[in-house]
Image 1 (spheres, rainbow, N blue to C red):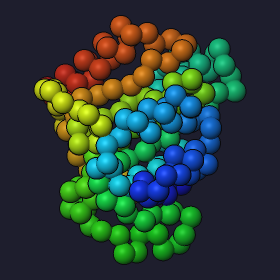
Image 2 (image 1 turned 90 degrees about the vertical axis):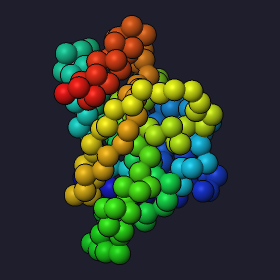
Image 3 (image 1 turned 90 degrees about the horizontal axis):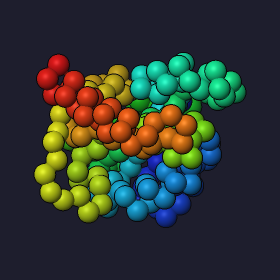
Length: 187
């Protein structure tokens, strides 16, 4: 697994993300949603790839593996933080000097899964409302646990994913979000 971080304060961070994960995972649509949708609270991201996403794998094995055999089964997961943590698993000492779990948890704003090959490549996503530009109103939230760098991080939010262009339509995504929320809230 490759894990690396990107400082979001620079204007070219989305290009850096695209170079790190490849254009198959960061569609133009997803790139634009990140550009306009993330708030100024987001200061850094940590990317892990490949990532095995349970929601994507279920549609991969039932649909994509049969219809589009060269499409990958792995995804990329992007974690959002209100602080930049320099991480690069390609270096032997990449865990040296990292903050402890409390520091990561304090700045954790959620995660987004990027699926391969979709025009709209945003998969399972849970973000704190502070990470979303213009978020207002009342949001139903459940707690989600995430494993990253040997730590268990928690995020409270409502699940989201984009409709892909193959099998999930609005009703599918809405049903998925409601069921994922209730399964987390009342396990």
